[in-house]
Image 1: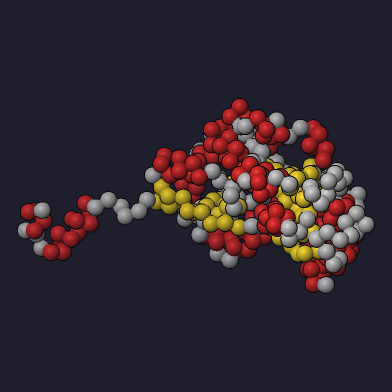
Image 2: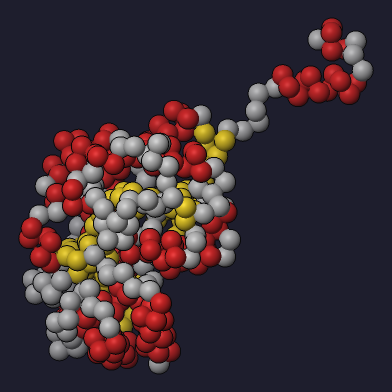
Length: 354
């Protein structure tokens, strides 16, 4: 204090500035689905690397893509796209290659999740969690329904009870209609898409159709009695039932017998991420078995991490292995681009505009 007081004012102020600790820790900006990251895991990362994780949220891949395309690729360090959106992000120049010198623990993953079609060289993404798209319904209204998309798409099966559909990407919406029509959830091409679009047009015209909602809102609407049946993701309902069984205890979920989506959510780094090295360290951290297990146990989604399975709660452990039976029913969303993607979007716009 005495030394500084004897110096010129400006020099004293500079020394004070140098002596003070940094005003804030470095930040990692994470763009994530809601309720999809264990706060304890986030805290552990913050403590290990002396950083602060700042999360923002999206409710659909389409929303995430639009945000990145509008400049968000320079705002976020890590994003969580679903498998089939990874090629779209690559082709649009919105994500960058990972650093294999940092992300060096892919061997923790099961073989079924290595070198996937959406990223065959494993350059741009790492699997985080996976789940299935299916139907959530009120068991007091539908006591024992046939596990079919018909509960939504067939007016004879459900002529009166209000129902909602999943908003977001048209490939998933038309994929559900394709599956119900016997063309497979992974249908591609003008003929099956046009057929699916015609069915969806009829569905949207029904008096008991209440609108498009995201997965979590669909569950809450059924719990409140706004709707009776809707589309959701497997883990979202399990998460809520565990947290509040008195609110969600009458709700149940099934994967339609005609087939549905196996969705693998991944970690990727935007092209102009502010902190790319820290982003790679975060992905490596999330691949560690203890953190992968905690993530699955928190979100009630399945882990693709083989090394984490012994730490996963029993009710998720076996289903995380992606059994042959599950592979017969669940398919990943096919990769489309260019003219096919444009055709799909055009058909969906026509369905929504009627």
